[in-house]
Image 1 (cartoon, rainbow, N blue to C red):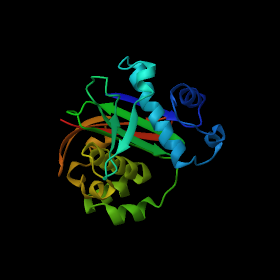
Image 2 (cartoon, rainbow, N blue to C red):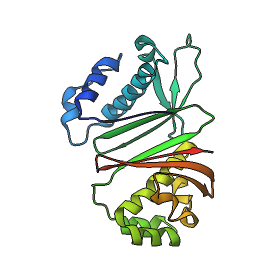
Image 3 (cartoon, helix red, strand yellow):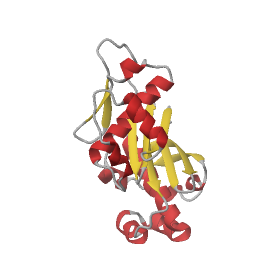
Image 4 (tube, rainbow, N blue to C red):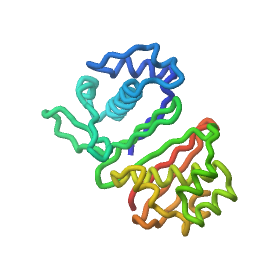
Length: 216
């Protein structure tokens, strides 16, 4: 699996946008906004994808600039490559929160998904938990607070994304009988109502929770 995480406001992202934007045009002032436009955020994730392909020597710069991201009706993203490139087409998972953007590439057999959340943002997590989570999941949130809520939420999202599903399907995944050991560890194997998964979680810069899930 190949992972890239960047702040859209960082100098590194400005460099990547200039280097990998290809035929796309964008206004640099967008990067200074509190919430850049959807078009800018989508271009940023495309640029992260292209840079991953080049940095890992899978594609040349010119080849990578021709790679595009499209979406199924479900919203799941997929990559399109130039016709003359004979490559194993990887699966892609994308996420963004606040200024953060993340891109994960994996082979199709791995079925990996990721989700990121800015854990410094105060949300009405108790109400969200009561609405969306099971009884045991709510007990976990009561014991662990907002961070526990985010650990559950991102796990559900990552698993759903690995299966090509959306938020409604993510909320159906019940992790209650897995608590609390797997979600308090950096890496774990978990069993869910939707299958068995490897789970990885990490807090970055004391502000960003990264969760990756892939099938066993």
